[in-house]
Each structure stands twice: as structure tokens, then as C-alpha cells.
Image (cartoon, rainbow, N blue to C red; front, side, top):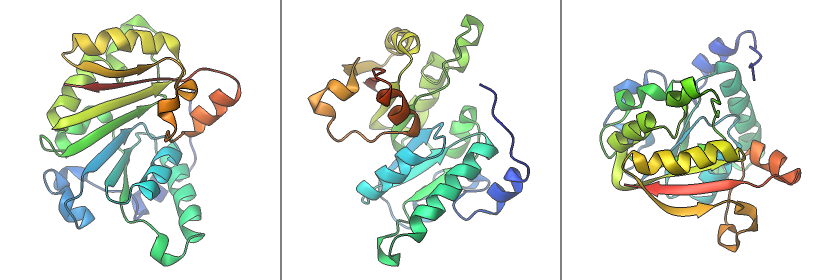
Length: 219
């Protein structure tokens, strides 16, 4: 699906205090940015940010980073975060969420080994052509990048409504040297998923009766 470019989105993102500019300068120093040494979780391809906004409110004992490469999408995420924050009393607003408008292929330029505690991949682009398999965020190429930035006990969580992508990932991730510790082909029908935080896409797809798949991978 082709994204609609919003005129002025790059300038809007560049000026936002929610966006970390030149994130490579914080490599190994993210604790200084957040002002604490709490674990840092990263969502890659965060879209409009609903998942991270809710998760950062639920889990204030952690820090969160959302990576999104498209400025038009990032602009909408910033606007929604600001609207939600304005509705909250000052003492309830969270300072544990920041955004990066960057490409996931540069992850190792931004983070030292072991600096990220958990990675979330939610409803990633399936890149259906076989020739584009290397672009899938669950491909061996990206799993190698995650291995370089995750803490030893870190894990990758992946959710999608795309069964073909999920089946491919179930095979590709172990081939990259990872172990699947959790696997569900109907997340919303699983009693163990009561604390599940939904994304915008997830709410839309599940309301249509589409099953949501989820896996968790560790080294």
C-alpha cells in the first residue's frame, strides 16, 4: 500500500520534542537521554503509535522507543500522543516514550550490544514477493541485527494477521538461530493473552473476525 505524503511532515517531525534526532549520538548512552537506567523496549514499525502509547502508560517502570521510517506516519503518531497527553493531569503524563524516524536497517548504529531489553514487531509489511524476503522484519537479516542490540535475556515479539507471513516467520526465525518459546494462531482466543495491548491494525482486523497470530522468540 502506497503511503500518502503529507506536505510539511518532515519539518514537523524534525521540530518535535518527542523525536530523537541523530540517534547515533546516544549509542551506549540512552540511559542519559531518559535520565534513568530502566530497561528499554523498542517497537520497530510503530505506525501511529497506539501500542506504545498504551504500553508506556501501563509499564512506567520501563522506557520505550518507537521506530518508524515514514515521516507522514510519524507525524500522526506525534499528534495523537500530544492530544492524549494534553488530556492528562501533569503528574500522570509519561516521559518514558520517545520516537525515532529512522530505517530499521541502521539499528546497530543507534544501540550498543545488550542495550535493548525487548523488541516488538507488530503487523509488519509482509513484502509478499519472494525476491523481497530479505526486507521482512522477521528475516534472518534482521534477526542478526536484533541479536546485536538485545540484552542476553532479551526477546522478540511478533504479531500479524497475515498467516502466510507468520508461517514463513515460524520457519525462518529458528533457521536464524533463535528459539520459539510462545506460538499462537488465535491470540484473542488464548486466555493467556488477557493483558494483550492492541495496535490500530489489530483492533480493525480482529473486529472483522480475522485471527491474530503471535510468537515470541529468544536466542
